[in-house]
Length: 333
Image 1 (tube, helix red, strand yellow):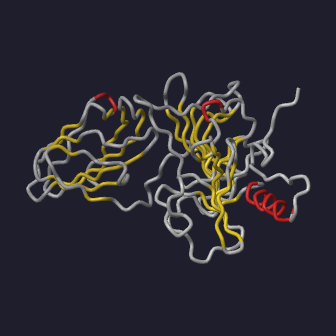
Image 2 (cartoon, helix red, strand yellow):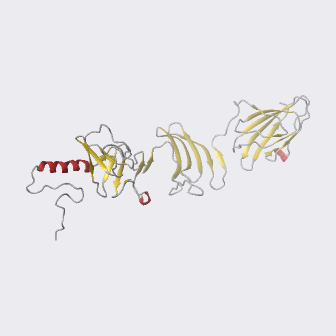
Image 3 (cartoon, helix red, strand yellow):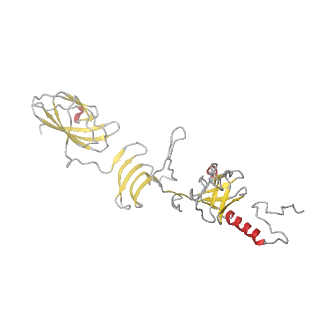
């Protein structure tokens, strides 16, 4: 059984039919073609323009706003499609599900029968995507590629973790830093389950800076700092002295009173440092050493007591965590 249909126009796009025996059929045909020109692969200039353009081009399409104004636009319902041709504006009926590209916003919109909304992917259903590029092109090796000034991983109410998981101990799970896609620094689990930090000047030859044993937590510095060519830093005297190894490995201090020498801050296992301890013009200043300092025989030495006498304290950091510092005092230097 055939369904009844309008004798005047198509039911969905309202394209006018040619009537039997109609005169001037070209008028009706041209009207239908004009509507098709606007409704097929629709591209509108804007959906946020309120004022009717003074000099529109033939074929220009606009989606009416709630505040549309102008001789032809005033009073048009929000969401209506208006097309300009041959000096006049005509309303085009958009069916439900109609798509349009908005040129000024560079977005695709869809008409739901009442309003136009931006057509966006349903991100909640975005699962098992084989490749994803954000402002970049992903490939087989980099299935997720992001080109951006920054990437934010924000909490969802509590803490936040970035997890890098590997299959086996001999595999690598790390963060690699590059210049021109050539490696310069890397930290993580590189080829073992011990944490390491590595650097490279060319992306090919790598030097391990630090390794932390996964079982004991003991750190190993691949190349201990040297201090032979380092200019010593003057310490301001206080009754409780705490050198900072982040500021240097060689120190000078003149004692103007009795004092306690604390373990330095920013200790690094394997680091060496020295302190030149000088008496002032009075002399007789005594030093007490923190328990971190470990001297031969287990007894802390006393300083030279003569006025202006100088002693050298040489130290090696054995354990930065406890801490433990092997120390030796050379008197009268």
